[in-house]
Image (cartoon, rainbow, N blue to C red):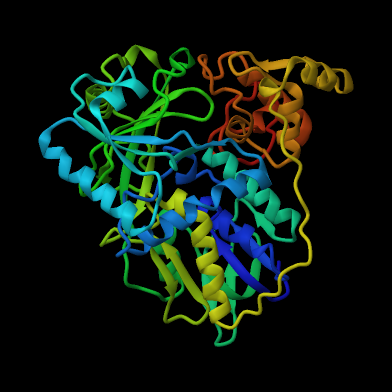
Amino acid sequence: MSNSLQDVVVVGAGIIGAAIAHELSRYDLSVTLLDGEAEAGFGTSKANSGIIHGGHHTDTESLKGRLEWQGNQLWDSLCDELGFGFARVGELTVALTEADLPALDRLIENAEEKDISGVKLWSRDQIRAAEPQITRGVIAGVFSPHTAVVNPYEAVFGLVEAAVANTVTFMANSPVTDLHHDGNSWTVTTPDLTLGCRFVINAAGLGASTIANMAGVDGFEIRGRKGEEYLLDKRLRHLVRHIIYPCPTPVSKGTLVIPTYDGTIMLGPTADDVSDLSDTTTTTVGESNVFNDARRLVPSLSERDIIAQFAGTRATIEGDDFLIGPTDAPGFINVAGIQSPGLTAAPAIARYVTDLLQEAGLEMDPKPSLNPIERPVHFASLTTDEQRTLADADERYRHVVCRCEFVTEGEVCDAIERGATTVDGLKFRTRAGMGRCQGGFCATRCIELLSADLGIEMSEVTKRGPGSWLVLDRPDAEPTKDRS
């Protein structure tokens, strides 16, 4: 398949690629967003802490330090536009020993250098009053009101949906297999199509160095840093009100206690360098380390309350800064090494890349108006009267699919209409399967609805794409399709 010359092809539909595509959709451009996974956001973006950092954990000497605070300030308007889960819960970074106190001073200095208001040194009594469950061993802390929690996968889906509504083409299951520049334009090859374009944005996350090598660009190596996370039962809702940080180390912000947007408590992440970039396993050692560290902050935490655990591998590069900029290959721009605070900085990174494209000669004419997207229904958060009205208008909202999270058939069907093609795609859009039973009740019904709405056999429904089938054919059944 061959298409006419595009202005920009963005490789990678994680939070960074999605934010770039969304920003570019504001302009009169032809843009294609490619991803090798079954759905957007299925890489590292679905497996992080979901924190929008307050900006004071980094200085202004690094690119990520400069973009962190800028990105932080853009998330409110994105939430208003797209309707994903987002709340500024604030944070406390706490010192447990006298040796930790210089780290608190550096946080205050960073905030002053960036002119971030409201970041204050708190006494032990102030911390204990705000967080009664915190350890009695705390001696001081730094409070920031700007730190927020977000559902990162919801944000990715919203960004991509809004981009597509404004003429961006999104293609999942489209890994880039070759890149070629003929002196005037790029040819981007995937298993199913060939695209010509003027500019290629390499936002491929863990695959960024591979994509760069295809383009003939050397100079960096992606290194994996795995983080394990542990989700606790919703009965612990409000155990803490703020995100609780230990004092940071040179390689990590440490194990955090995070009150998520949806009411669970999340603990993590670890920070283990790994050679296998596909390693998303959790370990008994990781669990032990996370809970030992987390109990130093909140002693009442227990492994018995775990309802889910997962891991994501972050893409780091030597020097640990972001690598964003043009390369020796004309029209090829790297956006690589986007580890923490990459989620926070994503909207600012998107604007930064847009400026780079303009500097490189791409005409950026703003569209006179944009097509809005309709916010997805979150039935559990509606008032009783709103639920009754919706259920009277559409009987699918009378049928509960997920009991733990109170997700209705209407929400599941809407998620499929918006692009969900897998069980994980439904889970991340609706929370069906994210509660205490982890899909024990709702998984079968989700598979049935995917099968019916997509017009495929139940045996063709996958958890997260090819190779993750959930239902086996009967021995006497005809084969449904070639799964090679």
